[in-house]
Length: 358
Image 1 (tube, rainbow, N blue to C red):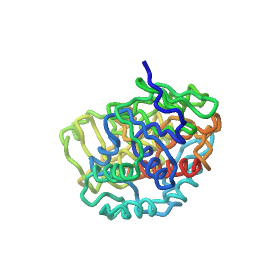
Image 2: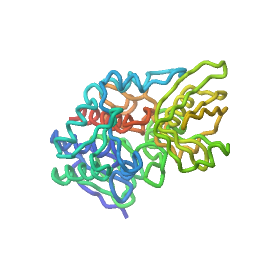
Image 3: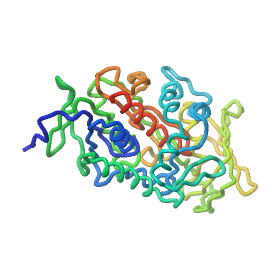
Image 4: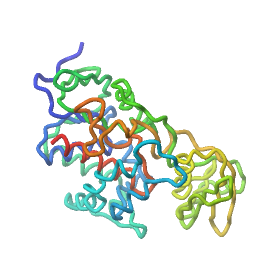
C-alpha cells in the first residue's frame, strides 16, 4: 500500500541523482528553492564516479564560444535546432570558468591539464560527488535514494510522482535521469519513457564515444596498451578527410578505444556514415580500417538520442508540451565530445532549469 509522503506539494522534484540532478539540487539550495532529489540507485553520482576512469574530467577550461563550436559534427544534417544553438544560453550563463570557480569555492583542489581538461587534484571522482553531498547535507535538501520513480503524471497543480512506496506531489518536475548507457549504474531510460508518455518525441538511441571493433592482430596483440600521443582521422568514401583528432589511442581485445577513437566514432554516428575509413596513428605506425562496428550503446560514455530538443525551450529547459516539466543533461538528445563536455552540459542545463523555476 502506498503512503502519501506529504500534504503540501513540493516546489520541485528532481528525478535522477547523477551529474545534472546533483547540480540542480545544489543550485536550488543556493537559491532557496525547496526541492527533493530522488535517485533510483543506492547512492548519488554512480556514473560520475566512473568518468575518466574514475578521475572525473568535469569540464574543459575553454571559452563558451569554443565549447559550443566543439559540440557540432562535420557532415551532420540537422533537421531541427542544433546542439550548439540549444545549449548556447545555458553554457554562456554557466561556462566552464564558472563551474571551476564553483568547485574552488567549495575548497576542492583542482588540476588543469595541458589540453585544458579539469580534474580534482587528487584524481578521484569521489571528491566531486562528496562535494555535492556536502552541499545537500548542509543545506538540508531531502535526498531519497534506492528509490526508482515508477510513474509521472500531470495533475491540477503540477505532477504526481509515483514510486513503489510513496506518492509525491510536486509543482515542478526536473527529469535528470541520464541516457541509456551503463544501465547497471541507473541509466535505464525511464526519464525518456516518462517524456514519451507525456507527448514528447524521442530521437532513437545510438552509442556515442565508444570503441570500434576489429579483430586485426596488429591491434589485438597490443591489447592493454595506451598510446597517449595518438591520432585518428575519419575519411569519407569519396576520400575526403571529414574529421581528425589528436589524443589517446588504446588497443583493446575487441579493437580500438581512447579519446581520439571516441571522438571519431561520435562524428561517424552523427554524420550517419555507413561507408568510411578510419586511420589511426600510434608508435609511428599508421593503420587504416573500413566501416568498423561500434561497441553496444550500453557501454557508451554518452548516449546519442533522447528527448528531442525541439520539444524543449532552450531559454528555460521547460517542456514545450507540458508546463512546469523540465529536462537537464543526457536525458536530452544533447551530447558533446570527450574531455569534460558532457558533464559541463549536464551542469549548465541543470542550472538553467532551476534558475527558470526559481
